[in-house]
Length: 207
Image (cartoon, rainbow, N blue to C red; front, top):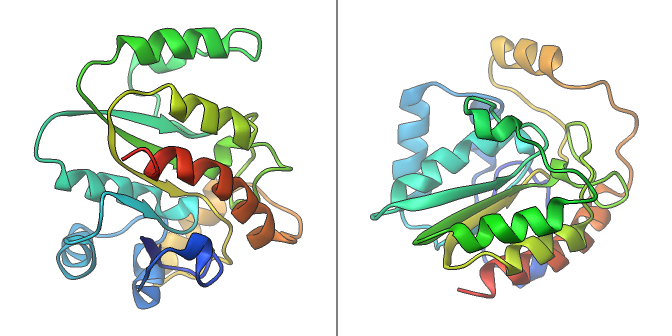
């Protein structure tokens, strides 16, 4: 399903059914109060299908809400240019030369179900237009990596560009402090849709 918070994706993207939630976007962007998250979960997200595409990476914290639907343990696998480095293993970075062999070893070590989240800021500039700095992956790289993961039972894709709109001044302050200063975001929808066309079938099509 396309969960539309900010018009980041074109109408009818990939032929997915759309759930309109534009009124929630400014309230949830960058961060939100717990009562707002809980209300959004109850009113909008409680019956979503296993695989969801939504807007800007400014909403990537909603992956935590989507994970609430998991009724059994899962391994969370995230493609993100800005991971929360709370755990030492995240700082053990892969390189361009070795990442595929190391990822295959990692994927083969997984047991049980996987929840996969992709923030498109992990992609290089020519493959994604985002609200954040660009990463180094090609869309084909991410599609390949997804194909190596066993038992992906649910997941999401976010990270497309949308003009930022906030409900509260504190959100704007946090975003302007944390976001890079970016030039014009031209052809964002077309570029991002081309990459989604490669990534989404590998993610949702395997379920």
